[in-house]
Image (cartoon, rainbow, N blue to C red; front, side):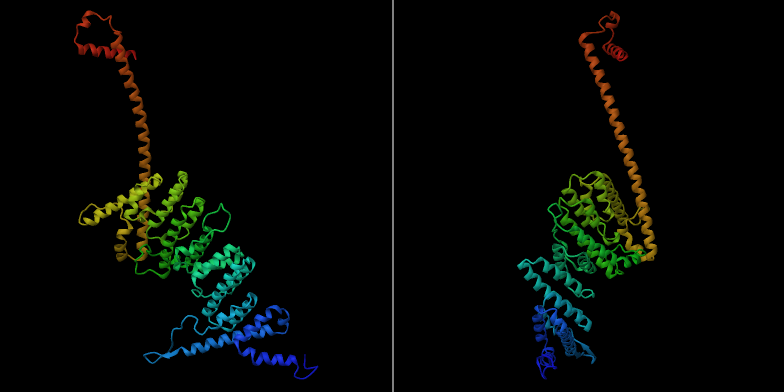
Length: 487
């Protein structure tokens, strides 16, 4: 078939056909690649596959450039700008690539990345291919092929943030957990999800557990790793926030990372309340999820208190030390008035937690009275940061404000320690009083019993007539004194 045997032979004619017809048309290139799937590695040795892949990548890049030029227009001020592009406009090749086998598809996408195709177009193609392949494979039941598709799609994702839809990332993570994909695949998906966790919903993070029957209903370990990734990405901003007052959610100096923390904290509290009734959920895992976020992520602890209350209700066999360890996650000073009133009457909470709630409620009442009568000379001992943080922020610099809040926090801790000591003293006094009451009741019983015996049997009947003629009151006094001496 070569030119050595005859001119214009089949080899040269095939080369000319590939160059002049096939490589000029993207659909024909894709069709040739699909036909080469059963001819590997011979088609690779003849460089048919590589030429078609380069042609597909070049055509996609040219289509992208042409689409960009078509969106150029003049604004009202006379300046040239690019109009907003509709989703995947000009990326008509996305559906065509979905017919390729996963190994050839991987080579095509890699070539497109090298040529500079937009990350949005790459992501749209990955989503389309994964939805088609995973749906077909789930019907046929080929888990090995599904696993290969999930791992390959994950490795081909663009590095840019917010390019791949979050719902698709969660769907791919569920498939990776179910198919037991390699650790690198799952960790990459968890890292990507953690970078945009603030836009996730509760249904997104409720990932079912696909392990043995004794495990929890939901995959708590995966969600914990996602939260760790989110917290680590917020770590740089956390260092800057330590020197300023970041406790008010409506602070005008709130940064986007602060807003993300507040959103994720609400998401975590709702997630904890959802998984708390699970009887197989261990205390350590529950606490690990609750304490993953930094302390300033929650401005109000009502959601966390509700989740812990649900956990205590579902796990009534917890010991008192475990209950105290669980309730350490709650900052009772950050409870709302309604939640504080509920916690003060909640018998499921340990005694120390109830004392803290009552103490902070007393402080709140003091501060409320002080705010109602600001002209009085009597001032409360401590003022809650929720009430006076606005005034402090206006009068102090951020560093002074933070230092003042830390001093107040130390004073509150000292006052709480005093109350604990006082509570211990009251418990000791109560025990002593109970013991004394038991002793006094036993003595009183012996006295009354002796009186009844003396009256019935007239033990002192040998008394003289002089004594018998004395007044009844004196006689009873003498009788009682004798009984007392005998006893």
